Amino acid sequence: MAVEVEELPDASSSGTPKREATLQDCVGLLQAPSDEQKFVGLLLVTRFLDAADEEAVHAVFSALDQRFLVRLLKSVRLFEKKLAKSAASSAPLDKVAEKAQQVLASQAVGLAVCSAFAR
Image 1 (tube, rainbow, N blue to C red):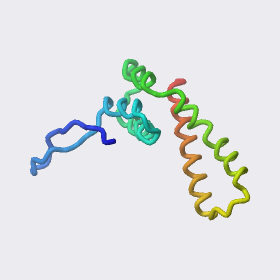
Image 2 (image 1 turned 90 degrees about the vertical axis):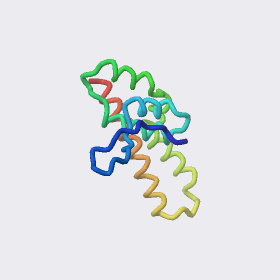
Image 3 (image 1 turned 120 degrees about the vertical axis):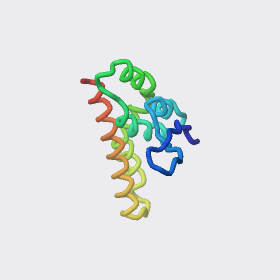
Image 4 (image 1 turned 45 degrees about the vertical axis):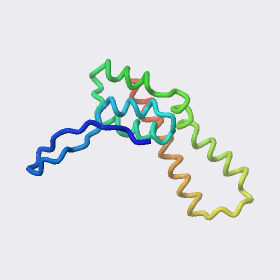
């Protein structure tokens, strides 16, 4: 599902419109049904959110699905349990290592979000 973004005139001489996301687009992604869209919203919101703007911070916090945040924080534990259950499987080690990196990155994003809202 694509998110519509605002078209702005490009500053270059070509005159073609430039697509640029806004904080409102990021909040929309945070409210999207898929975890992938929510994750992208979290990553993009850091580019647009001014920590001094309490109203914007509150809007982002309100849009954030708390269950999604908990899933990010628990991702390592869930991965470890899943890995232990499938220890007998013959999954290639490179695939397991790749998934482990993704899981650690997800948890790091969850921790960064908690840290940002705790300030």
